[in-house]
Image (cartoon, rainbow, N blue to C red; front, top):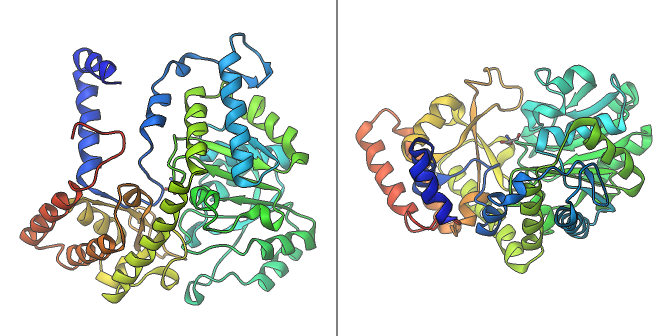
Length: 422
Ligand code: DSN
């Protein structure tokens, strides 16, 4: 890797400097975007390997190009590790990322125009769960359900059943990108069974926490299909996986290829295989437990200062702060203020947000990345304090400058996996 870096420095100093800058940025700050993480050095090695040169359309033993003895072995190992880890009957490890992975499920299992019952975006759902701006929202008839933020994000399953009886969905979908609680998959399954619908869970955010068995696994409730990205709590390369019952395996596989994609990115598939091996180890389980502890500690530190968290806390790795209610600052201003003190978050809509997505009412915070660097509950309490001070004193440049120095000094005590020369 270092030899390649030297070549890059000499050949394209512009790109080399940008990569070095990003390494510095990732080391200097507290990464609190809940969908981000630091992957393993072993995964970085696979990503930067000659596997990127190879076309492998098809599946192990059934490829459209020659020269597949090593790629077949890699994909088979990745699939076997995925099924074992998630207690799934079948795995497709080729989706290039989260959006195509969900798209492949809809097209593989449904017909255009079919109804899907899915969580409202502002309540925690994802763009690919039928937001009107996504292509998926134009092809399928998504009907949205909501949670009750004032009752710890509870989902009213009697209301959901009544809604399902009315709209007759072909699929009931649960999963999220900003919902700070766990799901009652068995209750979703009962609703789906009553109306003869398929069940799909998008666990992209919590894939690592489910793999480590510290959050519920939808397959334990009999779900049909489960999707996850590999780069969030799983700590792997960018990519997606579809896990399903055997009865859907052929439909899912042909929907991914040739339905939606061409050649899989075998360097990413190798990275996913390594990630899945790591995820089966005790160290990873400890990491998952600590991620949840850290989220609880951060939420407690913020709420102790009077901060409003949507649903009143968290049961997973993320939380959504109402920055308007807490600090009279919109989410963009809050995000920009925290950027100035090297704490990276993202602006976030809150349930039924009256504000637009680029100036929403909140921010989203998560603990997967800082837990990877070794930060613990005491660190979360410190970070919570810095966040509150910065948002309270956002228009005091001197206070912000002092906090920035404090956060940067603090971060230098924690290594970034795969970055040795900072
Ligand atoms: N961008 C991811 C997230 O931040 O949740 C999901 O697409």
